[in-house]
Length: 207
Image (cartoon, rainbow, N blue to C red; front, side):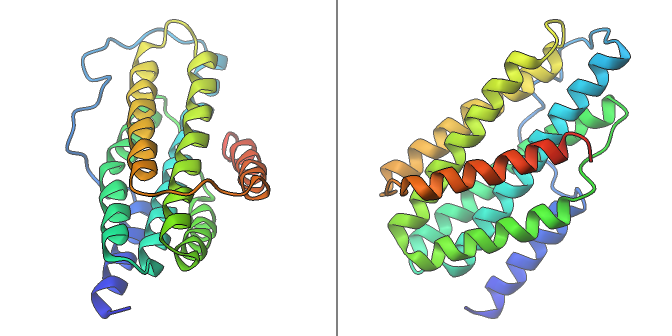
């Protein structure tokens, strides 16, 4: 591990946790008029968007942790490219939270640190498992996004447009990792990931 990798990893963590990421693609909701939401609906949508923002924080950390310990340069570059592409998601979720007069999770540093450690362990496990971890992560994020799309108030087309585009991106990233040689993870690891995800989503919805 050289000094350049250390600097890149540290820089990404700082930018991710301080909302300094910017985006290349326009916000999918940019041309959609904001709908009227009741106070309860606004709070619920903000909770959902906060969970989705945390999911992207965790994805960033997982990718960076995997890249940090990846044994294969091609795999490392794959992780960094995927992380870079998903900074759009962070920005879109943050913009929507601002519109809803809400905030990102106060526990983001904790989510990032834990996910980075898991990603680093996956990277150490080897190339196939590293990519397999990406596949499973993206599939689980896709499932969460499906649930949130169902839970959104019918009139909230701004949030819906953001989550739909995020879902399409997650599907593509999972397929890319699978085609690059990702191995199916053992069922016990998948269940452990789902358990951790439930803890995260329940907490991040409120905090």
